[in-house]
Image 1 (cartoon, rainbow, N blue to C red):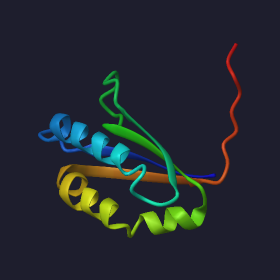
Image 2: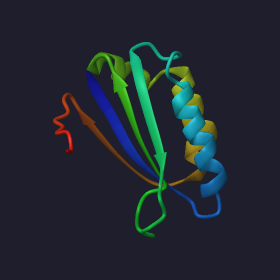
Image 3: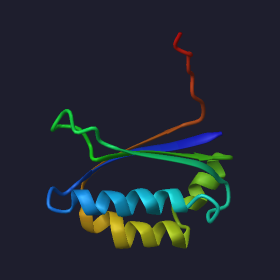
Image 4: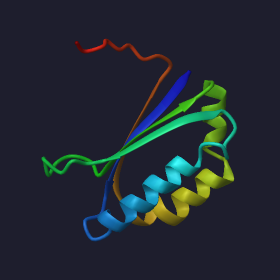
Length: 104
């Protein structure tokens, strides 16, 4: 499994409407992009003004699939039409493995 995650900070005047559009768009990529097996997207709880607007985690069956995702027409259209016009800042992170511990 290969994971690509990101935090998107949207422009204040576009944040609310754009966040919904971006969330729906990212989730809709599952089933359209080969190798993209799972997507999670969450909006900020708005408890701290310094946090990003959206956090997403996209899980791929391989690093090769993630690399193809970047050039996939559905992904490029989402970036062009919804993300780029609303974007103020972005940060990305990729990992090949997660380590987790269950909370009791």
